Structures are given as C-alpha cells and as structure tokens.
Amino acid sequence: MDPLRLLALLGLMVLVVVLIIMIFGPALWSRVWLFQRRRRLAAIQRYSPRVWWRRARKKPAFEVDLPTVRDFVLTLQLSLSLAETLAGALTQAAKQFGKRGAFGQRLVTRVRSQLQVEPEAVIRALAEDFQSEHLTELAERLDMAHEGGLSYSEAVNLTLDDVEEEIRINVEKEIERAPVVLTIPMIIGVFFASLALLGFPLIMTMFGQVAAVGTSGGG
Image (cartoon, rainbow, N blue to C red; front, side, top):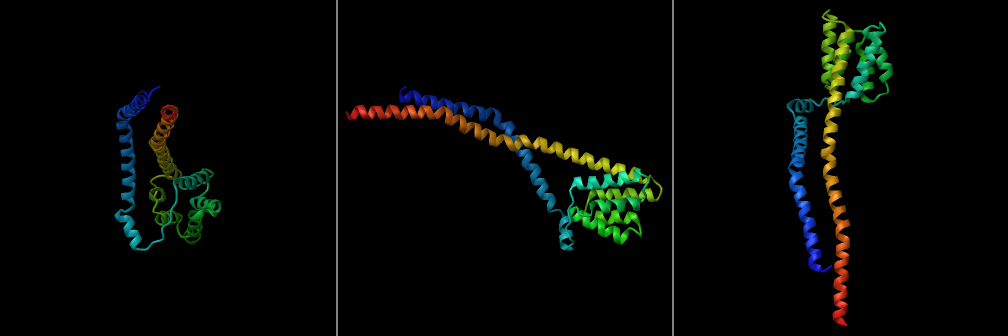
C-alpha cells in the first residue's frame, strides 16, 4: 500500500470521528451543561445568607445525612406503633443511635437535658442543631399532635414519607447523572483505542515501505 493511500485512510478515519462528534456532540454537551448548572446552583446554595449568618454566629456545624434521619424517624414510628409514648420512643432511639456519630451524641445529650421537660423539645433542639428541614417539619407536626391536631403516629408517618421521597428523588438524580459522568471518559477511551487499533498497522506499514524505499535507494 503506497503512502498516499495510507494518508487517505487516516484522513477518512479522522473525518468519521469528526462526523460522530458533530452528530452526537450537541446532545452530549447539553447534558454536560445541565449537570454543570446543577453543580453551580448547589455551590451558590452553600453561600446563602442563612449559611453566612450561621457562620457569623459561630454556631457548631453539625451535619446529618438523609438515611440517618430516615432511620431515626423509622425508630420513632416502630416505637409508637408498639404503644410507646413519645418520651419512650425518644429514649429507645437514644439507646439505638448513641454510637452513631454526631447525630447520636446530640440525640443522647438532648434526651438527657430536655426529655423530662417536654419530649417535643428534643426534636426541636435536634432540628436546630443540624439545621434539618425534615426534623423541623417533624417538630412542627409533633407540636400539632401535642395540641390535638393529629396523632403522634400520623406526624411521624408523614415525615417518614417525606424523607423517603427525597431519598428516592436523590437516587433518581444520581442515576440520571451517571451517563453524563461516564460518557466523556467512554468516548475518549473508545476514540483513542479505535485510533490506535486502526492506525497502528497503517503507520507500521507506512514506515516499512519508507524503510524499504530508503534501502533500495541506498543500494
């Protein structure tokens, strides 16, 4: 195969790759842009006025993840379903979560200091400690239950449904994000692998022919 034909084949390969990028590129980059936009919004939220106000007050920054909140609310639900009082349910939760990181430590501390005064105050204090939207909603619902608006079990069940729904939404977002995160490395890997597999034999043939021409010319 002469060098001109080899160059033509390499040019054809490059053209095919360019066409593939032109065809599938817009859809891919639109998903990448959407993903980056979500990341920018998340970064903006970290610098919200509420966060800065909390930093200005130098309040301890405790964090709790949704699975831990779900397990805590689920523990309350199970205890209340066994005819436990709210105080008894919180005592049981403190025993179960006592060694579960910062959340367990704060729960034990709040139960010891505030349970005898008012069980609902334990949830309000936890919500304030962790700035948790779901714990805040639970505290509000428990206050309504204390006033007779609904039962403690209903208040806990509603909060558990909300937490599980948010966890489900987060899982769906991760599933949607996975193709965007994996597509670019896959394209790069396939492109270079294909280029190497197709181009290496052509380049070796070209060098072989050049070497043969040089040898024959030198002879």
